[in-house]
Image 1 (cartoon, rainbow, N blue to C red):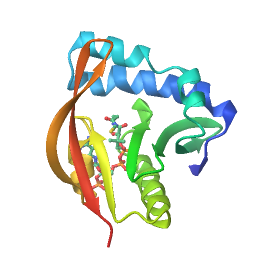
Image 2 (image 1 turned 120 degrees about the vertical axis):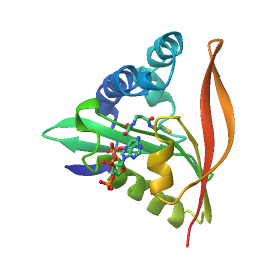
Image 3 (image 1 turned 90 degrees about the horizontal axis):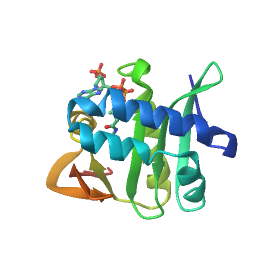
Image 4 (image 1 turned 90 degrees about the vertical axis):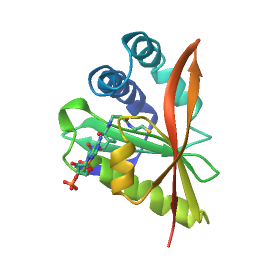
Amino acid sequence: MKIRLAKDEDYSGIARLHRSTIRHINSKDYPEDVIRVWSARAKAERYRKSADKLKRWVAVEKGSVVGFCDHDSGCEITGLYVHKDCIGMGIGSGLLKEAEESLRKQGCKLIVIKSTITAQNFYENHGYKTGKGGFHDMDGKKIKFFIMRKTLG
Ligand SMILES: CC(C)(COP(=O)(O)OP(=O)(O)OC[C@H]1O[C@@H](n2cnc3c(N)ncnc32)[C@H](O)[C@@H]1OP(=O)(O)O)[C@@H](O)C(=O)NCCC(=O)NCCS
């Protein structure tokens, strides 16, 4: 598995993976109507449009995107998703490490993530503390998240 910065030609693979992970993995923690709206938003064009605002990595295995992670120009990690068939193989941890290192170089002392219910324990295992909960409003559907924070040493 190789981790590198995302390129334009990765976006359709990223979108496919994102949709599938929401439908198969996040679906254990969110109602069906929420999953439908959330996954429908995962389109290649969306990632392409944010490419100049976010720094984004992909994990690639045998030519296929098996995970991605991005952060903004502040100190927020804005997304981390692993392919549904590759969960628990260390890909998420590798991507998170890459993003944290990049934020450290950017001068961040505190990293913020609006975590899904699904990933809350994963982030806690990586040293994040759970703060307040909130909701993303996606086309009228409320998607629960937890604000997680980690101080960089
Ligand atoms: C959360 C996610 C990114 C983690 O990636 P991953 O590649 O599965 O994680 P890793 O294999 O690197 O896991 C590292 C450790 O965390 C554990 N872990 C993985 N997912 C976990 C979870 N959801 N809850 C608790 N522990 C978890 C693993 O068992 C492993 O433990 P170990 O090191 O003691 O063996 C991935 O499961 C995922 O895509 N989840 C759904 C999408 C999502 O909700 N993303 C967050 C958006 S904010």
